[in-house]
Image 1: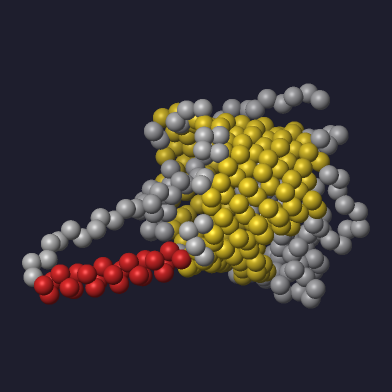
Image 2 (image 1 turned 90 degrees about the horizontal axis):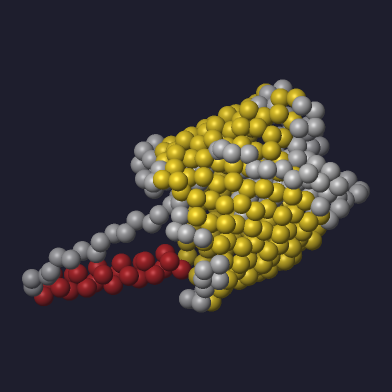
Length: 361
């Protein structure tokens, strides 16, 4: 099979959200009353911080607008993501995540829906797992998101029911085994339809991935995965098990310029290659007011080269994406992109546009 070279260019944002550090109050009390008040306040704050550290609620509320050439508006709705985590002790925690989508229009098409429309949907327990941290080794048991390498082959809507172990202080190695449990809104599946829950066919899934830092600014990433491209549960047959490799590197050319690229390949008999690259200027951070970035991305993923991702780089499509991120308010993120897309198998255009506004809590 002829080997495809990774085409130059394109993009990356992706926010590395740094934590803010707040200095403690260093005022010295000058009398007993002040000392007592300060002690009580400190104890109360410590108790509150300890409780908030043990139990945490976080998530995102956003509005998304999608337009696809030849189809018109394909999504216009609100999304609410909710994460609840609880720390049982210094090493063990539990976490659950749910997601809800409410359409602002009731006439949007969706090919895989029983009624041909995109309906409201909800997935409770999108993630639900126990996590353990043991001296640099992380273990997860239950249902969890897993996004190896650059998230092309297996994205964060391809949940895994099973186990994960990640270890290594220099070279990070992650091993995953279990069952792929993907959710595609409106397949058999929609919270507004009878007997509809969004769950696709389940299949066994196994993976190992590596992150190798070769310098302070450059990483090499690689993964080997074995799984099945998901199908709606009503389809009697199932796609065959395939092996997928994904490998590439990411680096910072300069303070405000970053780049990443990757190659993918599967063991399918045909249409089994893919390439991708991103170039980004600056870096948006929801915790930093008015921060922004501008990026461009090239993607060419053949029909049998991936399982599925949630970054909207679709199989059997190739194109150039141009996008921006901007933080208009603290803990918010505006993302706008245009993708000049061509369907590989038919050589027809299918340009895409998205505008998305998210608020984090």
